[in-house]
Image 1 (cartoon, rainbow, N blue to C red):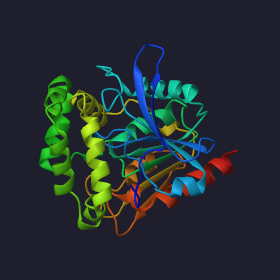
Image 2 (tube, rainbow, N blue to C red):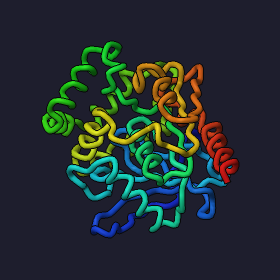
Image 3 (spheres, one colour):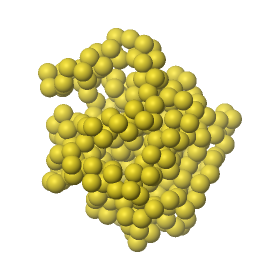
Image 4 (cartoon, rainbow, N blue to C red):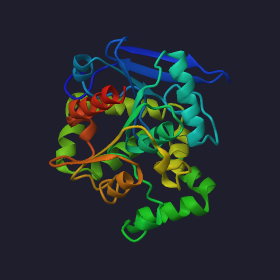
Length: 291
């Protein structure tokens, strides 16, 4: 695949100490700067970003299947802290050191957890799912989303069972129906669409329990302290993105010390793929400055 993303250069699974497997995919040179991707909702390791860019910038991009998605072993009841621990183990197993972390869409709070627990050396949140359960957002959420948030808070087990009924087709339809034309130009590009559909199919290969657990965690209150994150952070949203954050990440950026808030005109939630070079260049500059 060319253009927005490409097929992985390397695919594999790593054995965690507790016997579980974590599936991963890599792009770019093995000796490149490690960048760990926490991908979006229900997508597998297969969908990366920055075709050609990662090679040009000397980036070793690593995308990981969260437990229960793709080929990674399920971990019922897992937490954000559990995920950060898994990433710490993966960094040892794959020789990633202290990587830069990118969190896209529903991967955002998982990436923030990595930063909060000292796994990340720098962080970019791109079109990130916001903490919609915060009281500041209660009056601005649409009725359907507000109802789901309230249900998740009051009955997380029931909400998780509901989300476990989703399918790859339902996710595709939801994204296509909720995206502006500037994003659809990316998502419906034949090469991108094929890769995205494959990532969704793989994400649901073990059923929807992994996606359901992710969603309950992301939609509830986040247990980590954003004001204690002490690594460089960039927060990126497309100006036309109405689905990930009620305020294009303004409150989120204000809660993270020193975070740089970028709002990009002319694009929505497809920002990770349309502006990959800028996102990675800013991150790499931060890592060099921090050394």
